[in-house]
Image (cartoon, rainbow, N blue to C red; front, side, top):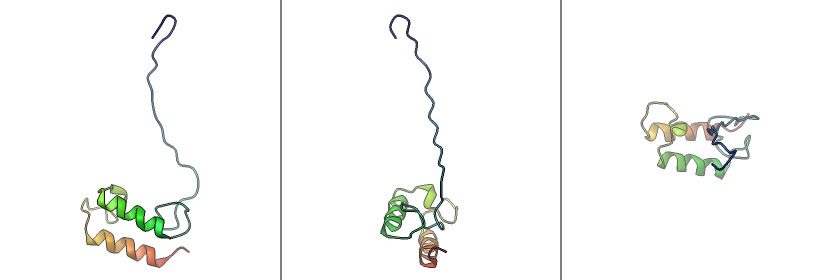
Length: 78
């Protein structure tokens, strides 16, 4: 920093306000609609081992997670 300047610590905060998806398979915008975007988001998360797509929360990315996603997706939105 120069004269009369100071460094301030930075902090980041993410707040999500608004509607949630219609069920666990509703992962991508537009929320409230199950579509190819949700399938793509699940596949990207699954291949990247993203905890948000570990549908049974066991820390393992396997057929159980795929089956749970498919069941929620085919159940549709209320």
